[in-house]
Length: 133
View 1 (tube, helix red, strand yellow):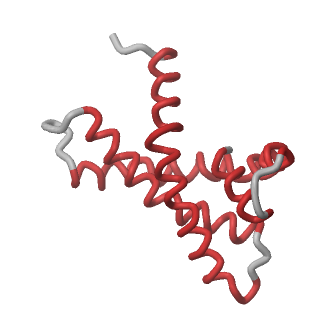
View 2 (cartoon, rainbow, N blue to C red; view 1 turned 90 degrees about the vertical axis):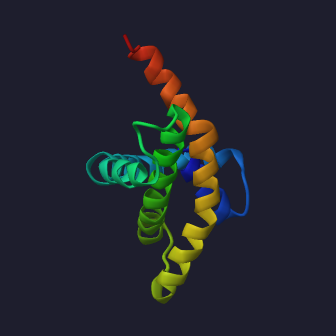
């Protein structure tokens, strides 16, 4: 949702109250797509790649979390930017250029949003709902 708001704000020239409502319309499409990509394709791949970077048997928990989160953003950002370009940009013959630009603008936001906000919030909520024994 936050990334959708960010992209709408980029497309409209800045944040306005209507961005928050508009984002719900795109969330209906982008939410399930993000879930499908992460759950069925990139989630497992991100762990495999991350565990090639850090050894889960020796690494601290935060190192594992950062490695998986970083690789997930590297995989998801271009894919979701591609979907947004196809569905919402009317890119025409400038499709590749707009997709690359969208990916470049989305990557820093996606990375910092995942590392500092979304990831910790989701881990906290799931930790409360499903406590480890």
